[in-house]
Length: 154
Image 1 (cartoon, rainbow, N blue to C red):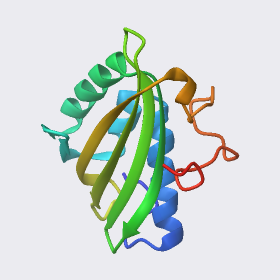
Image 2 (cartoon, one colour):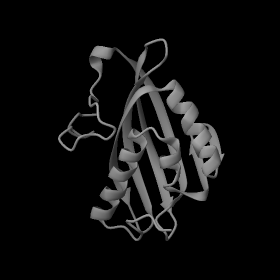
Image 3 (cartoon, rainbow, N blue to C red):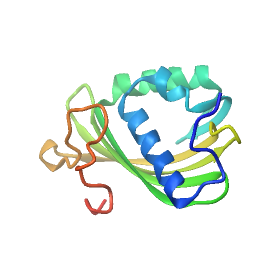
């Protein structure tokens, strides 16, 4: 199984990979998202360390049970042959109704088959008022007409 686009990346294929990842995460389907990662993929998400798809599915299931109405935008920061760096922001609310905007950076490393074999994420949460939200859409994926991070000055 391969997961195009495959490394080595060009600007066009790196941007495509980033948008595919954004769309996958916005689906909030842990099983679907996990398929983009190698079976032995290694993650660091904040201070949580994961190994393999099964742990990824469990982690994402728990995440999206806590982070309600999750909306994410990713943006390419840099790339090389088999690595991509992204910055991102996402908004969500807790069960108590408190809204947050989470900001972060991810470093990705891909296997030759296009599956991500390493993901390193650093993330910070900022409490916001619901009126201050910027990420508004109802579809699972961000509409192409919705502004990106740079246009939103995030």
